[in-house]
Image 1 (cartoon, rainbow, N blue to C red):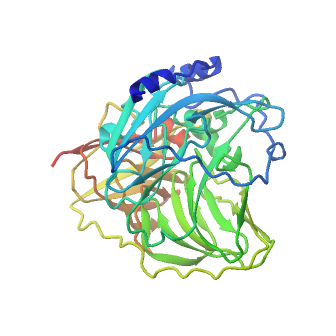
Image 2 (spheres, rainbow, N blue to C red; image 1 turned 60 degrees about the vertical axis):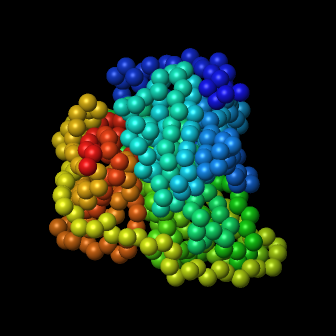
Image 3 (cartoon, helix red, strand yellow; image 1 turned 120 degrees about the horizontal axis):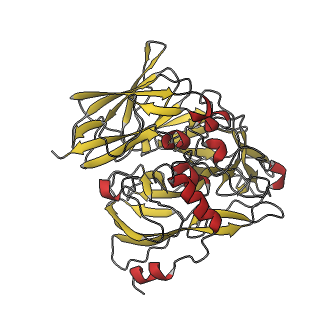
Length: 496
């Protein structure tokens, strides 16, 4: 069957009235991402979630293309019913009926065709978070896919982009709503010469899900102009690959590579593994120049990723916990929590693996020839507050900054608010080159490729960035309620 016919044939007839009501409410000027009133909301307690199940390996999206060096797959966004807590049936929104959606594995230089079908009751898109794809394939809010409609996303995977990414909707003022209902999934780009390619690998996608007393998803606590998200940052269950505190069985002494994705709407995660140190080997845009060994924790702002290498302790039949250690700085960090149980088996211990001294060079972008200033601020008070960039709320019909293809720039990200903001720039990877804390310049310890950087309250972060493809790009806070409440702007990339 031709892929177009297949998409039409897979129209989901079971769109519920709830889906349409939520979509209509979100698109008719209601509070961004709101899916119900706060009065009477009761979050399910952790004890109602099954724990200790074997860690689920995520489904991998099938490549249906017969053409070498091409990837073709189909993603359908639709509501479906799931059993998450005892005695309740929950409506989730998923890609291909899964939460999280299927893992997409691509190769550098590969031509990609993703046939997308929107079977929700509201506009949606797919944003390929972190990948430098053409502006008209980026899934921005300026390019919505209407309910019941299909479209094909086509792009070439850039060379040198091997790393850990993810994909999610980016529709106007409903991103919190859609991601909060389960529409998110990992994407990995592989290279032909990965220096860590021989290590056993694990993808850990961390999400947060809130249910009301009837077992239905609620995102209202993290909406209301973003202020609810600020006050309720710890609400919702932290899940790994869609599970509450699953169990990962390992060989004593085994060395593994973990790709960790913070796919929560608004939650900061300070990752640590009980009784262990680990090496950070990669960030948003892929491998570092050298491993950063001997670490006990790592902060992941919303949308950020990290690759770590862990050598498990040699003791047999022992359990350890990967946990969120809690983070107060972001005001969305929450008090922390357990994420994953690691259990060693009753087998002889393996010898730890020695990491290579060098991984992948992180080249400097060269001298900057322009400078931009991006000021993060807020307006209003309480639940009706908004979040602004350069004093303005998002307007997709307005250009806020301009640049040109290939132009290296310094951007000063200035946070004048009382909470952290993780800033994401579409269409490129960038490097942090400086921080100003209480008026004092702070050096950067190592170069890395990022597409999302945390800008702490009252601080300034300076990045070096370059766009290589023309078109209009979003840049915004990736606390999704803040994005929906206006903390987003348009960068117009002019041709050379």
